[in-house]
Image 1: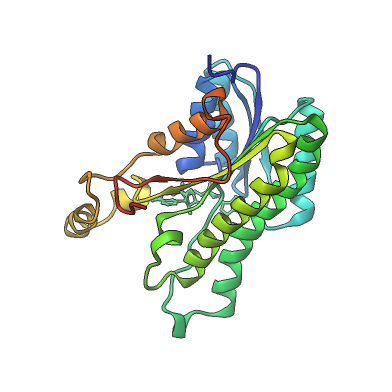
Image 2: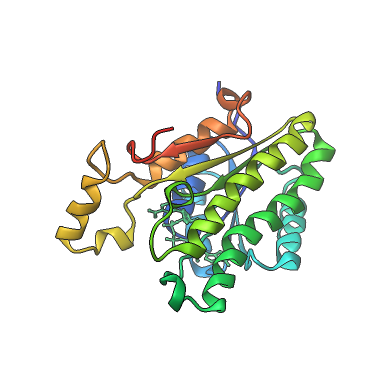
Length: 248
Ligand SMILES: NC(=O)c1ccc[n+]([C@@H]2O[C@H](COP(=O)([O-])OP(=O)(O)OC[C@H]3O[C@@H](n4cnc5c(N)ncnc54)[C@H](O)[C@@H]3O)[C@@H](O)[C@H]2O)c1
């Protein structure tokens, strides 16, 4: 019914966290996943879990901000499987600082990984998807790209950039049966949020109408919708996954 059985996906930054949840959820629905990460040990662990579920996985060490490495990843995946149906641009970093203290390096590294990484993989996979007349591309933005946050000018710019990029490329690729969407998660339960002091957790929960943090599964469920037959008529959209933090 979802039409995902036997499809092939690439998920960047899937060596842990939300990316791993996305890879494993796609695996549950019958998708083979190429797991891309700078952390090859983490990528290998995700692949082991996919294989444990009876799926095929391929771990690829790659810095998404490097155009040549991104192209090599796509080439490797096409040696492994003959079609790439799904790309999830998930790899992302933060280097927080207030504007007057933010170094050029902090600015550039976040733009390079979060935004240029998304461009690199989207461009490299598009050539193939256009030939096949089929593709599903999802990029992970953030609530911070919608509402901003003091101390995160670089991150907010990169995540807002993903939204503009998504809409432009959705228009370019629609005629080739390729959908391009973004997801804007709010506060998602991760190793980082788990280690926050209780008082800070309560403050953050107070900002969420549903009163709780989301999970990687909340994000990966939306990915499944967008890349399956259920979401085939949705393109150029930003789906908020934030417990109601941003309503528009
Ligand atoms: N956790 C949240 O609350 C939250 C909220 C909104 C958006 N997001 C976004 O979701 C995505 C995943 O977040 P997370 O919390 O799971 O992060 P995380 O730090 O736990 O995982 C990120 C993964 O990306 C990999 N990575 C980092 N730089 C890379 C590079 N240059 N090339 C390839 N891989 C690289 C890391 O090794 C890691 O495995 C990010 O894009 C993040 O901005 C997270």
